[in-house]
Image (cartoon, rainbow, N blue to C red; front, side):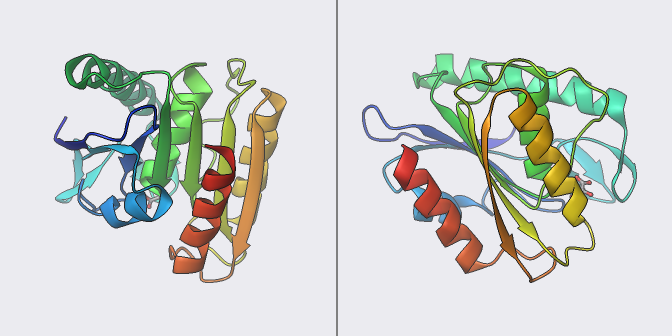
Length: 200
Ligand code: MLT
């Protein structure tokens, strides 16, 4: 997958940056830097194109996902992270996702399918990626959800359901609410950074 890798300081997590629909691997670099300037960075470009816009999996309509494709792309991304860990020499067990919108959804899907894909995740404006799915044990996984009380793309119940499903699997989850629709605001990033710095 097309990506950018930047080595972090010894012992620091690697931030897996996952952009929103129509983004690229460059989009979240400033956010990664705000969260932890010493962390490693693995920033990936989604390899699905929707009218020329990169995404991490196909959708049939806005908010309606092609689940077969989602499952396959989630596996591909998980394998890609493992291969990148081998190639670049970072700790596969110390990867924390930072995703926005479609990128947050594939990060959630990684946790829905694989117990050890992520040590933690910052999910900006996510949805429940797949329902009626038995989640792996996620004890020890910490998740920050940034959501909008008036987000037309990711409604309030999606964020709340996502929290319940992750908590049901043993993850520790915190939700931060904003009221700027689907936008990713500076205050939301600052809240995510404060959460991260308290934990890692
Ligand atoms: C998705 O397709 O993952 C969600 O609808 C969010 C987005 O528009 O990317």
